[in-house]
Image 1: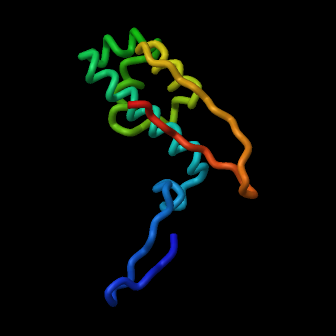
Image 2: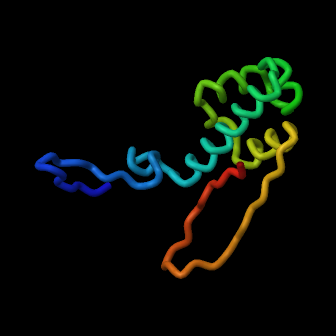
Image 3: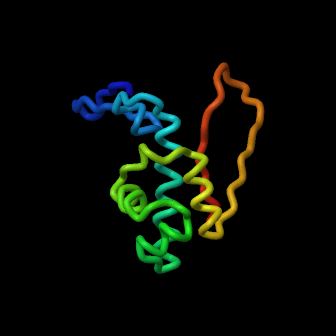
Length: 112
């Protein structure tokens, strides 16, 4: 984060990753996982599934579904979250391309 003065008020300019701004470890991983959980949550609402039905369909426990919906996804890997989305009839595409910068970026995009 950087600080800037705007109209006499000191403002912190955030990065595009809140997890990084908060100083959490593995912020890119957390950003990807949170994006996947957001999409799972949308899918569950769209499909009208109960937590028990969702757990059965995604092959995880109801307790993990409950935790996930409350923002606790620390016990689920990115791969498992992608598998959950697949089981909810969603495709996932991973695109790898060279960058002109000294370090590449992880980007989570959702098709509309």
